[in-house]
Length: 230
Image 1: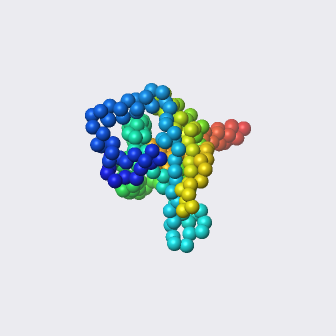
Image 2: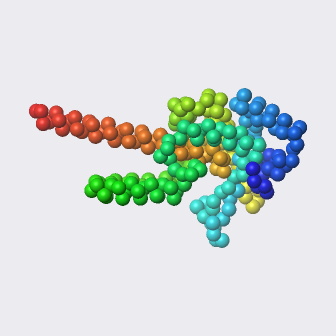
């Protein structure tokens, strides 16, 4: 845990957690274990305060701003534990948000595949998808279905489900904070789980899309065969 990081809604700096001592660590461990066993998150962990920052000096529209949302450091400890378990089920062809599998590695692999394909004079098809505002459009029901189909323990799935279903957000402006509002889709901004959950979500959607393409191709091939037989 890095020093001098912004605090979440609980206003507890990460530096303080490092100074708790043996007694404080036991209390912290008990708190995290209780959350893990019951699946119930404290309100400070489910409520998010978004801070709007201007992208340019004359910002008048929502699109002229970007938001940040500090997360409670205590919650990060438990989420890191869940993150490691989800990482174990990710496919080997998934890049970004993973150690040793960054954008440069993906570009390098794509170049190698391209060169080898051209060497044997074969066609190569590359599909580029623009995930515009993708993090904000994750369907929670679909996400939970995907998680249920994996080897992730039911307690981790329950924690993720409760973390999202109980989520509320308020926006901090110059004149104060707005009232809390419920959010119905998207992954949590600033949460260490968000990139890996999005990665798992997009991977499953890609597989489903490819399976539909293959089924359509097989159907067309069968229809063509029937026409020839006639």
